[in-house]
Image (cartoon, rainbow, N blue to C red; front, top):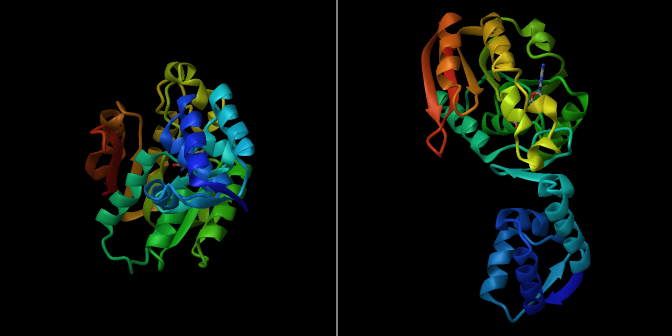
Length: 289
Ligand SMILES: C[S@@+](CC[C@H](N)C(=O)[O-])C[C@H]1O[C@@H](n2cnc3c(N)ncnc32)[C@H](O)[C@@H]1O
């Protein structure tokens, strides 16, 4: 641990932020590499006369911040950590950085299944860092979950994140294309969730470089119209869900109505387009019969 005066630290912080970047990314750097959490940062600012302990020196922190600014590399990849809901998850360039808007999926599940003692059997398709499945496995401790991904490296990371976040063993990971690793669970699921790749090809080409140059293409691109994977997931869902089982999908900002049509075509009922905190129809949910 390195001890420096709060005054020196605050001057340094001001200089770093004047170069660019946002406060949230800077807070991630300070927490993950510097060892200064958000609440400590707040206390420092109201007591600027003291000293503070850093896990790494200012030059090292500055070198990471510069790399973030110069290369537009997301700070989460440089630090190897992303915060999502109350989880601290390992991330690498093999997984999508879990987005704040996706956090609402957990709230949607909680509004559908109100009792935390519920013995749900859920599946998540395309788990990436494991964020959604881990949060659900923790929220419903008597549930059983299965999570799939096409990428073995992503699954290794998700497994580590689960072990670091939970003392339980109610979540298992499987590698393969969407439903295919879950053949033995046909007709057994109360709930399936997916935040699949849904970016249309033309939009993908124009994504900001911090996304396009660093985040995995396989996690983003949803074919020409963005609906390629969503279609496949919806078409096979009836084979895996119990009667009245729920399917929750995240989609692109303008895909809600199209996803709704696909759900109707595949005999889903109670269909609803759920808005995110910006008022965008970000999730489409339905019940199989
Ligand atoms: C948008 S990311 C979502 C990651 C994570 N669930 C989240 O919300 O942050 C989509 C995930 O689907 C996975 N994926 C892409 N194609 C797949 C396929 N054919 N079968 C299974 N998973 C796939 C990607 O590897 C990626 O982890």
